[in-house]
Length: 496
Ligand code: NAD
Ligand code: 6OD
Image 1 (cartoon, rainbow, N blue to C red):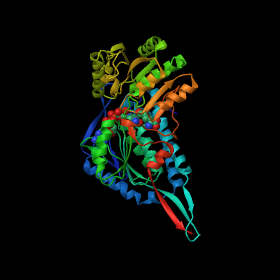
Image 2: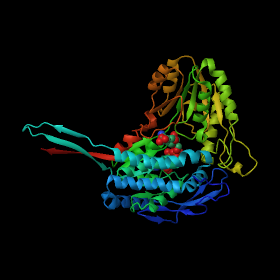
Image 3: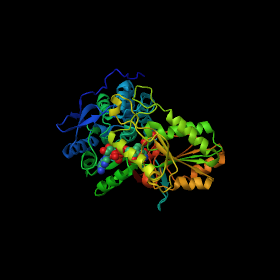
């Protein structure tokens, strides 16, 4: 597939990005700027959806449930979703360019992970919805003739999809695809930081002929703005949200009055456990990736690394050497690490770098901001950072930072490693590095998380359950779990 080049303009450059409501593009007067985290320049402006426009979007979505979309068979719906995937691939370079313009992430990552996964999400859920079986139970009755119970899956109705900025297209489509596959209609709100790939998705939905109102897109902010208007709207039936745990709590409150179904994928403070018997270089490369991928802005990233004492010093030195060698730069520079999403987020991450020092941590590498001597100094770049020596109760060890940073500490025994990993209010993911097969199963199972990887990280099979425990989420998505969330099962009992 063709990739964009540095000299090509970003496809939405200078435009006013519209909302899509009932099949109509709306370019309102109220707008906000979309700013590049690479150099601080304004990329485009974005139509801000106020409460009235959100209401129109929800009403359009409700009306579409009763239109041609509601009468499509599952195979017909799934055929449309496959066309969406095909069209994303036909416009691959545009999507990649849009994603890297908004986020500054590397061309390599956007073209090998973010955009391919967007297309894959539509194909996977088309396949899964088609293959879904119904339950059927025969029962006895007093007259001896019996009865047959069978289930049908109906759509839940209007689904609000609220997405974050870190993997914008991957995470938006991860929810939009199963929602549509199950026959729902959608009002999607991408993060205000990353509107572009969602804007292109709206175009694709129009291009493949999705009936008006089936997919609606509203842009804007969260509290007191578009997001809150959407999640508190009485005619929204279900909310699929990915973002911070505190935002999840706020959305729960907004959704409570109308008792909406909720699926939440929230924050993490994930541990990596490296045992002395692990393949050293695999554990090193894997941990480098799990700490610094996407500039540390993946909910699954390891922010706490625990290493068995006999290899601790060697592991710290090697990880620090690899971190120092990471090339920081813009999307087209062959860099390993792009910028953070914004200057505001960089300030938050830097405040944790300062806090780590104040909490008596030792900065092993990084801890500051790179200086380029060019326009990138107006961006949101930051150094990859490793900290050691913090107390386990330090805020830097307890709170999600969401940047390219980890705390690294030694452990002496397996039970201690398990206890340290689980001593957190979050429970999303863990990575266990060991060559002892029994230990691998034992420790992975003991992790209080939704997803544990053994000798790898972020290896995804879309049929598997995905989500977190404790502050990291409510419910599971992925495979049959997504189909269950986005459907209402109904039992039909037929007396024979
Ligand atoms: P965020 O919670 O600030 O925002 C996410 C989305 O929610 C945005 O679209 C935002 O506009 C909207 N929003 C904010 N307040 C709202 C409100 N009161 N009502 C309705 N909508 C509201 O998250 P973020 O900063 O965009 O993303 C980073 C966070 O997301 C991190 O905490 C990360 O761990 C988490 N995350 C979790 C997963 C997962 O799968 N568990 C995946 C990716 C990111
Ligand atoms: O791979 C996925 O399906 C998924 N939801 C990843 C989430 C990554 C968090 O930043």
